[in-house]
Amino acid sequence: MLAYLSRYTHRVAIANSRLIARDRAGVSFRWKDYRAEGRDRQKVMTLSTAEFIRRFLIHVLPSGFHRIRHYGLLASGTRADNIARARELLAVSKPEGQPTAADVDAGKPKCPCCGGRMIIIEVFERGATPRQRPTAPPIAIRLDTS
Image 1 (tube, rainbow, N blue to C red):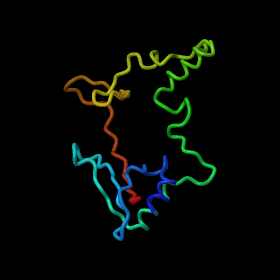
Image 2 (tube, rainbow, N blue to C red; image 1 turned 30 degrees about the horizontal axis):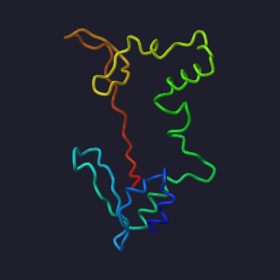
Image 3 (cartoon, rainbow, N blue to C red; image 1 turned 180 degrees about the vertical axis):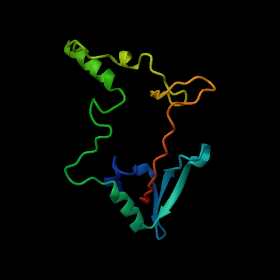
Image 4 (cartoon, rainbow, N blue to C red; image 1 turned 90 degrees about the horizontal axis):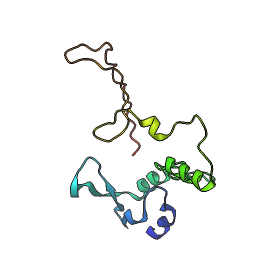
């Protein structure tokens, strides 16, 4: 069964290397618990064969569809570099009026934790009361997809 499933797992839902075993108890595979740190992060889960196949098939695309998560020159985090390199190779200059990545990011604060762009909603002095009241957190609807 592992040999059969491995033909369909390549770049779909689970890497071949994560499948460990199949026996009467079900299918065993490795998974990563992002809440844990260190050696406890990698864990092994055993599901019944029917449940494993059900979860696997949730990630299989219908015929004719393509995954586009990491597809093409414009889909990655290096998009700006790819476009600049293509323009350089084609000897085409940047269109007038288009800001560069440096222009867009200049003067914008970055998150000290992840380095992402922060959007300033309001700046107020120490001890002062904010003009805007905090919005209520959105109601979280949890769906168990397992």
